[in-house]
Image (cartoon, rainbow, N blue to C red):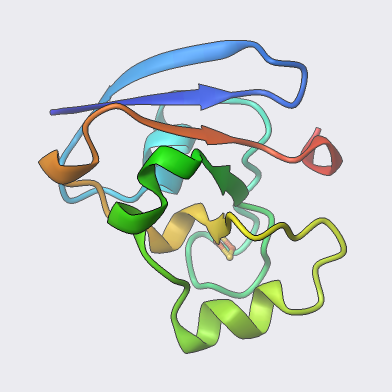
Amino acid sequence: MTQITFISAAGEEILIDAEDGDTVMDTAINHDVPGILAECGGACACATCHVYVDEAFWDKVGEPGEMEESMLEFNEHRQKNSRLSCQIKISPALEGLRVTSPESQY
Ligand code: FES
């Protein structure tokens, strides 16, 4: 288990014990976290699982892959710490991870 905090665009926090090996998106969907829609079910094809990764975890989470980058490229809400949560796999290295959903996903 790895603890992850989901933060809404309004600043409300939800702390979850996430299963290692799941993605951040899986965790959000399994726990009914608002603000992560995941319309494509994790196929890296919709970008409705977009999150902003807390700067303290940016190095651990890493850069988007090529396919993810192409989905983020034209997203008007993109910031430098943007990732698609279906492409972030949970592991103990991410203990304490904090991600915020963009306002556009509510
Ligand atoms: Fe569709 Fe992540 S769930 S891109």
